[in-house]
Image (cartoon, rainbow, N blue to C red; front, side):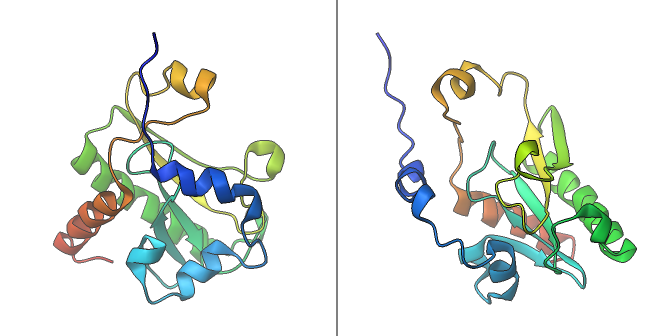
Length: 167
Protein backbone atom coordinates (compact mmCIF):
# COMPACT_ATOMS: atom_id res chain seq x y z
CA UNK A 1 0.00 0.00 0.00
CA UNK A 2 1.41 3.36 -0.95
CA UNK A 3 1.45 6.41 1.26
CA UNK A 4 0.26 9.75 -0.15
CA UNK A 5 2.88 12.42 -0.70
CA UNK A 6 1.58 15.94 -0.37
CA UNK A 7 3.48 18.64 -2.28
CA UNK A 8 0.92 21.45 -2.61
CA UNK A 9 3.45 23.99 -3.88
CA UNK A 10 3.85 21.92 -7.08
CA UNK A 11 0.20 22.39 -8.10
CA UNK A 12 0.81 25.91 -9.40
CA UNK A 13 3.74 24.64 -11.44
CA UNK A 14 2.12 21.55 -12.97
CA UNK A 15 -1.05 23.41 -13.89
CA UNK A 16 0.75 26.33 -15.52
CA UNK A 17 4.05 24.88 -16.77
CA UNK A 18 2.89 24.71 -20.38
CA UNK A 19 0.96 27.99 -20.16
CA UNK A 20 3.66 30.24 -18.70
CA UNK A 21 4.22 33.58 -20.36
CA UNK A 22 7.50 32.99 -22.16
CA UNK A 23 7.62 36.45 -23.70
CA UNK A 24 9.83 37.84 -20.95
CA UNK A 25 12.97 36.57 -19.28
CA UNK A 26 12.50 35.52 -15.66
CA UNK A 27 16.08 36.47 -14.86
CA UNK A 28 15.85 39.94 -16.39
CA UNK A 29 12.51 40.45 -14.64
CA UNK A 30 13.91 39.33 -11.29
CA UNK A 31 16.94 41.59 -11.57
CA UNK A 32 14.73 44.56 -12.45
CA UNK A 33 12.21 43.95 -9.68
CA UNK A 34 12.28 45.84 -6.40
CA UNK A 35 10.51 42.95 -4.63
CA UNK A 36 13.29 40.56 -3.66
CA UNK A 37 10.94 38.29 -1.72
CA UNK A 38 8.58 37.83 -4.69
CA UNK A 39 11.47 37.04 -7.04
CA UNK A 40 13.49 35.18 -4.37
CA UNK A 41 16.46 37.40 -5.21
CA UNK A 42 19.20 36.99 -2.62
CA UNK A 43 21.59 39.73 -3.79
CA UNK A 44 22.57 41.93 -6.72
CA UNK A 45 26.07 42.92 -7.75
CA UNK A 46 27.51 44.92 -10.63
CA UNK A 47 27.59 42.02 -13.13
CA UNK A 48 25.53 39.22 -11.56
CA UNK A 49 22.86 38.38 -9.02
CA UNK A 50 21.69 35.36 -7.03
CA UNK A 51 18.22 33.98 -6.50
CA UNK A 52 16.58 30.82 -5.25
CA UNK A 53 15.22 28.36 -7.80
CA UNK A 54 11.43 28.51 -7.63
CA UNK A 55 11.27 24.80 -8.56
CA UNK A 56 14.25 23.45 -6.60
CA UNK A 57 15.86 20.02 -6.76
CA UNK A 58 16.67 20.30 -3.05
CA UNK A 59 16.26 22.85 -0.26
CA UNK A 60 18.67 25.73 -0.83
CA UNK A 61 18.91 25.24 -4.62
CA UNK A 62 20.03 28.67 -5.85
CA UNK A 63 21.18 30.18 -9.12
CA UNK A 64 23.57 32.93 -10.09
CA UNK A 65 22.84 34.75 -13.33
CA UNK A 66 24.63 37.50 -15.19
CA UNK A 67 22.87 40.84 -15.35
CA UNK A 68 23.46 40.78 -19.12
CA UNK A 69 20.92 38.74 -21.07
CA UNK A 70 23.42 36.22 -22.47
CA UNK A 71 22.80 32.65 -23.67
CA UNK A 72 26.35 31.54 -24.43
CA UNK A 73 29.12 31.00 -21.91
CA UNK A 74 31.65 32.36 -24.41
CA UNK A 75 29.78 35.68 -24.46
CA UNK A 76 30.34 36.37 -20.75
CA UNK A 77 32.80 39.10 -19.89
CA UNK A 78 35.67 37.89 -17.65
CA UNK A 79 34.55 40.20 -14.82
CA UNK A 80 31.07 38.68 -14.93
CA UNK A 81 32.34 35.12 -14.82
CA UNK A 82 34.66 35.98 -11.92
CA UNK A 83 31.80 37.62 -10.01
CA UNK A 84 29.54 34.62 -10.65
CA UNK A 85 32.16 32.17 -9.36
CA UNK A 86 32.74 34.34 -6.28
CA UNK A 87 28.97 34.26 -5.77
CA UNK A 88 28.96 30.47 -6.02
CA UNK A 89 31.70 30.29 -3.38
CA UNK A 90 29.67 32.63 -1.17
CA UNK A 91 26.50 30.56 -1.59
CA UNK A 92 28.32 27.32 -0.82
CA UNK A 93 29.55 28.80 2.46
CA UNK A 94 26.09 30.01 3.42
CA UNK A 95 24.30 26.83 2.39
CA UNK A 96 26.91 24.66 4.10
CA UNK A 97 26.30 26.57 7.34
CA UNK A 98 22.50 26.49 7.04
CA UNK A 99 21.88 22.95 5.81
CA UNK A 100 25.04 20.95 6.44
CA UNK A 101 24.84 19.11 3.10
CA UNK A 102 27.16 16.24 2.27
CA UNK A 103 28.14 17.84 -1.05
CA UNK A 104 27.17 20.24 -3.85
CA UNK A 105 26.45 20.21 -7.55
CA UNK A 106 27.55 23.44 -9.21
CA UNK A 107 27.14 23.98 -12.92
CA UNK A 108 25.65 25.42 -16.07
CA UNK A 109 23.13 23.60 -18.27
CA UNK A 110 23.89 25.10 -21.68
CA UNK A 111 21.16 24.36 -24.22
CA UNK A 112 18.00 22.29 -24.10
CA UNK A 113 19.88 19.04 -24.76
CA UNK A 114 21.93 19.69 -21.62
CA UNK A 115 18.84 20.23 -19.49
CA UNK A 116 18.50 24.02 -19.63
CA UNK A 117 14.93 24.97 -18.83
CA UNK A 118 15.68 28.58 -19.75
CA UNK A 119 18.17 28.60 -22.60
CA UNK A 120 18.15 32.30 -23.45
CA UNK A 121 19.72 33.55 -20.18
CA UNK A 122 22.46 31.33 -18.83
CA UNK A 123 22.69 30.76 -15.12
CA UNK A 124 24.84 28.82 -12.69
CA UNK A 125 23.10 26.31 -10.40
CA UNK A 126 24.30 25.75 -6.83
CA UNK A 127 22.56 22.65 -5.45
CA UNK A 128 23.18 21.28 -1.94
CA UNK A 129 23.18 17.46 -1.90
CA UNK A 130 22.74 14.84 0.79
CA UNK A 131 23.43 11.13 0.70
CA UNK A 132 20.21 9.48 -0.34
CA UNK A 133 18.52 12.58 -1.81
CA UNK A 134 18.49 10.97 -5.25
CA UNK A 135 16.20 8.23 -4.08
CA UNK A 136 13.77 6.35 -6.28
CA UNK A 137 11.19 9.12 -5.90
CA UNK A 138 12.69 11.37 -8.57
CA UNK A 139 13.30 8.53 -11.00
CA UNK A 140 10.03 6.62 -10.68
CA UNK A 141 7.60 9.32 -9.64
CA UNK A 142 9.03 12.39 -11.29
CA UNK A 143 8.68 14.10 -7.90
CA UNK A 144 11.14 15.93 -5.72
CA UNK A 145 10.58 16.09 -2.00
CA UNK A 146 11.61 19.49 -0.69
CA UNK A 147 11.42 19.60 3.11
CA UNK A 148 11.37 23.40 3.48
CA UNK A 149 9.13 26.17 2.11
CA UNK A 150 10.90 28.55 -0.29
CA UNK A 151 10.03 31.57 1.86
CA UNK A 152 11.75 29.94 4.84
CA UNK A 153 14.85 29.20 2.73
CA UNK A 154 14.84 32.82 1.49
CA UNK A 155 14.65 34.20 5.04
CA UNK A 156 17.41 31.90 6.33
CA UNK A 157 19.83 32.73 3.50
CA UNK A 158 19.13 36.47 3.67
CA UNK A 159 19.71 36.40 7.44
CA UNK A 160 23.18 34.93 6.97
CA UNK A 161 23.89 37.39 4.16
CA UNK A 162 23.08 40.18 6.61
CA UNK A 163 25.47 38.73 9.19
CA UNK A 164 28.27 38.77 6.63
CA UNK A 165 27.48 42.29 5.45
CA UNK A 166 26.68 41.24 1.91
CA UNK A 167 23.63 41.28 -0.23
